Amino acid sequence: MAETWCETEGNANVLHNLANGAGGVRMGLAWGRGWGHHGGMKFLLTNDDGIAAEGIRVLADAVRGLGDVEVVAPDGERSAIAQAITLDRPLYAEPWPEKGAAFGWAVSGTPADCVKIGVRKLLPSPPDLVLSGINLGPNAGISVLYSGTVSAASEALILGYPAIAFSLTTFEGPIWDTAARVVRRVVEQLLRGEVRLTPDTLWNVNIPNVPWEQLKGIQLARMGESRFVETYTEMRDAQGRKCYSMKGDLVELGDPDGTDLQALREGYVALTPVRLDRTHHAAMAALRGNMPTL
Image (cartoon, rainbow, N blue to C red; front, top):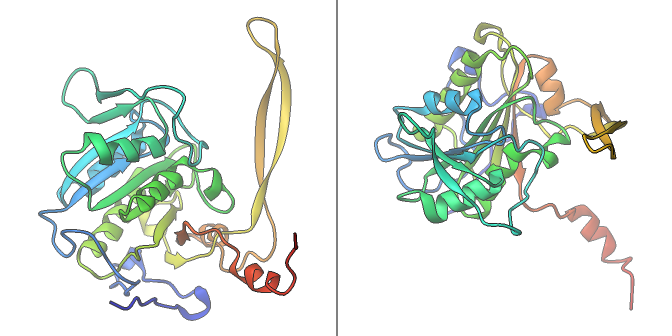
């Protein structure tokens, strides 16, 4: 089956206006079991903030009723751990919470570990869609490369499962209702076949921390060119050993037009298609006539 892609005018005209509930546009080839109906859908939820984080509970509530929800998440904070997996020690997976109604599995490893062990061992059947988040804090610009939230979705894609990462662009005073409504709208439209994921692409969705009524819509956005500028504070640990605490500020580079960072500043949800293939294909073509030799 041929793959199709919807180009939007100037990359600024949006997929659709979520706030007004407008219809979706086709985004390529959907795959997986159960697409087009709700009853048989199976969701795997994970994050990098840990299973006790509010964001993953909001995520679970947002998709509840659309299918079966399974949660496999780190047993603690694993932010900025990227695509790391655990090789030097065994993984532990325990039902969480220890008392009361079970919410999911708490895993001693990374977000990528959670997807792997969830799919291979813990889930009773494979998921149709993997959702990561809702992260507290943005995963836009270069943060995509550091993000455990996005990397969990990347791991799902490696294993052959459609995936979306969701982040709310604040660290304080989160407006969870807005994030939950964005998640619900996006997932419902996927299930109805109004918008579609492609087999080689995950969606990285960043949501402004504003009331729902203030959202301007959703924009297709490229990853903003940026980097972190770090400072290190020297300190001493309990044993008196010298150590360092890091703090970093995101600095934008290049033209901001059409980027996720700019879309968020303007009050739009930013949707960035992310591929696993990080090959610089234009550089490949240029190097063919100017290769090192042995």
